[in-house]
Length: 532
Ligand SMILES: NC(=O)C1=CN([C@@H]2O[C@H](COP(=O)(O)OP(=O)(O)OC[C@H]3O[C@@H](n4cnc5c(N)ncnc54)[C@H](O)[C@@H]3O)[C@@H](O)[C@H]2O)C=CC1
Ligand SMILES: O=C(O)C(=O)COP(=O)(O)O
Image (cartoon, rainbow, N blue to C red; front, side, top):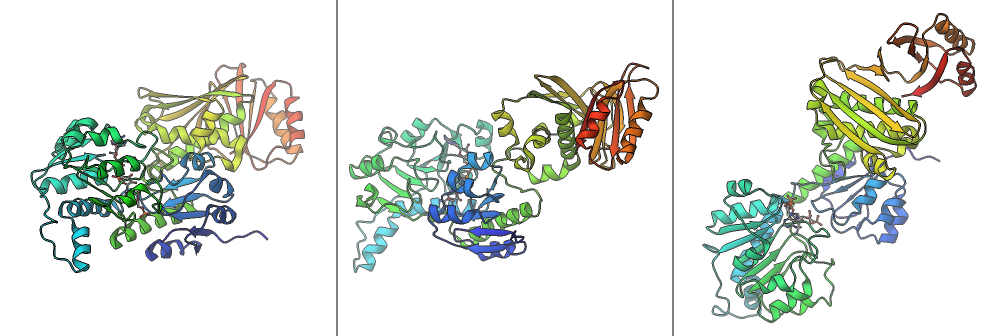
């Protein structure tokens, strides 16, 4: 029997506030500690998956998720999710980009201070009956140089606090401008310089193929022998064996890690045998009550909204399509999708190119969402429900469809501007234009070179014919004979008795046998049934 209930699987510990939100729209099953095989076996029954860093969402898991629509990461890093596969499968990935910023920054600060004052070691020694005040003499952060690698949300907060503590802050981040850094009272530096000059180094960048083992033996060798390294970002950015060696050999002054290449940290990791100057915490950066409530609510709200058919505010795999843009451009996106559906049904054969032309005021809207919507429309006549905003660009690319984007602000055809889609393929091309009126109504305004003024409707018939007496009547009677009711009809032509288009809105789809009869009418050159 078909299951009607929407189901969400929560496979990591999530704050109850998030579970309560999900429960408003779905059955919520909490199953922490599943193996990949368990997850693969279960996921086919779920519409959404909510995780933290403890669940590996592999390509196989995503492919087994036949009903899966959204993966919600209650936190920042999505390196435990195979995002390219999710995109390919049309599964939305959302996260909480800001919910745990402060928690992670404060964990880095706690580790810097703990390293400087040997807090964990002094505590252990005191608990064991000792009173060693000499061994645990520390250092001050005041007037020291802090090197921040990755000056994003967390890195900037650490920089701000450390500035206030009287540190000199330098940073390496290839994607931050010198102006922005200056506003934060931070001097940009090269990575090598930063490792040479800093007394404290803190990492706040994502793990990507580019940043894997970025901090290797060579870079560690550039650090001052007193300098200390903190990593609350991601494991795998530091080469752990090289770090263990550098600590043991006294190449660097100390290190504190919250994250590891493999989690949980292996019992035989070389890090576990480093005796001195190393502090390890078990990925606690986001583990504050405040952060856990923030990320759980943020992500659960997004899952709930997406399950209700609404946009998500922090989608990782649909760039440029925030909830705010989706809301503001709703009719424009609808127009782009409708025109895409229309033009793809006019164009037979192999599609090679889609030109998206934003004219007049349309050119002032962000083009990327409109292009994605147009592609979704174009591809959905072939791929149906499988195509969505997540995978439309990727599917077009995979099919070798070239996308051209043109902005023409000078066009003055409609007050709100217009959008034109043109296809080119092995059987020639077609073009349609449309506009959004002030009341939000959509209008098709040209079909190929012919001006029309038609509201899109579910079933339509478009013909290309010779403008001559009697042809409209003949078509009308053929449709009537087959019990197809015409709701409206319009003809567009450029010259009298030349070529013309006819657009019929009809109440029912055209059966294939009727199409043959329509093609046989004298003067009809093309007839295209369209479903929008
Ligand atoms: N330990 C924990 O529990 C937590 C860890 N994190 C991790 O912290 C890291 C930073 O998070 P946010 O600040 O929120 O991210 P963000 O996206 O705001 O900042 C990351 C910064 O890294 C920079 N970056 C990228 N590649 C770089 C490279 N090759 N070299 C230098 N900089 C580079 C980016 O330009 C960006 O400014 C992420 O890896 C995230 O997963 C986040 C929260 C909690
Ligand atoms: O948000 C992040 O990137 C984190 O690393 C936090 O991980 P967690 O949710 O605590 O497993």
